[in-house]
Length: 125
Image 1 (tube, helix red, strand yellow):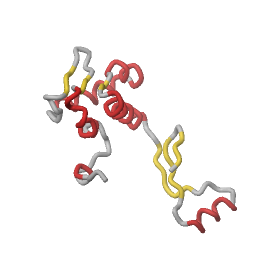
Image 2: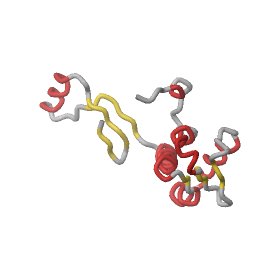
Image 3: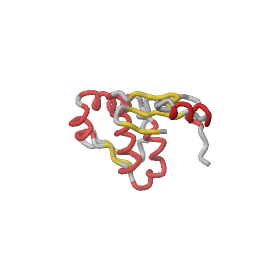
Image 4: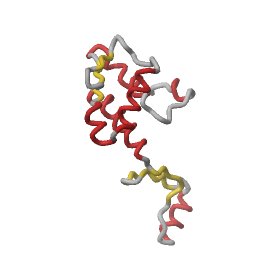
């Protein structure tokens, strides 16, 4: 899988098709995903939670504008927070307490626009 500024491109898995594409001077892409501003917003929010255990709403707002605040407020109103471990600051930022950091993936998943019911039960390997 190749990552570009515009999105992702997955090469064909079939070796013969891959070689043929290269020989013909074409990219061997099989499928891809063009990133939207919403994708970047959700991705950055998830990255903040997973890496920093902190969602910096002012930073998201500075980069993405009003959609950042709308996204965070929608999740807060949904009641899906892990409240014993998440605190919300006056500026809307969210912090995960040290004892709740093992739940960061579960908390970050709330901001995954592509989350499906089937994916909720994926097992770690």
